[in-house]
Image 1 (cartoon, protein in one colour):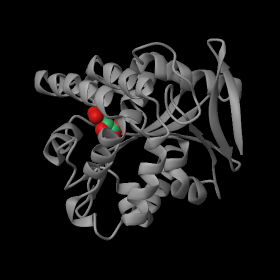
Image 2: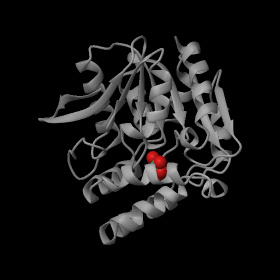
Image 3: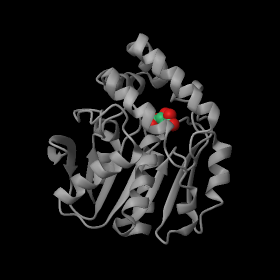
Length: 264
Ligand code: MLT
């Protein structure tokens, strides 16, 4: 069911399905709550699954010219407070993972578990920041070309010819974004803090999902990062890129279920 919650004189859109312990799904850059359709259907058979359109994505409007990860985390908190939920597991895909980490930093007592799906706790490198600025210029010149090329790059090259429907699905969601929403997310990601310290300190379970063919966040970086964790749950997807839950949904859903049992 699609619902809305108030935030800064505007509304945040989210879906709320199923009953039971809460699981919060946070989409990545150019996504929306819809990108989690398969996971949501599967997990909502046993959990209450809340999937939020982050600022500037899906049906949630923009809140300024740069959407920091902290602003996005506060938007997530506004939804969860509105639903009067106190503790939850956060599952964040890529940028959604940066938001989940900001959330864990700002509101540590609310988190029961954290799944970083193709996401990193490190800040952008100098090179990556320069790429973001170039990306902003491209978005301003040709938004459709930018979103098409970016989405294609999120799948493992060898999966492109098999996953036409999934690529079209992700493109359809990305096409709904405004130039301003895309640029605000790029600035927010570019300026985000490194939060790798959190990984070694927290007591709740953390799961890291790694795609061997991820073009955005190299598998080697995530393997290195997983060594910071006390008791990590690792899902290594040898056939996938940056979109494991679309590239191998069954494997990912089974691993998520197992992880949720560990958290609750
Ligand atoms: C995402 O999928 O959310 C982004 O590609 C993450 C990023 O660009 O750092």
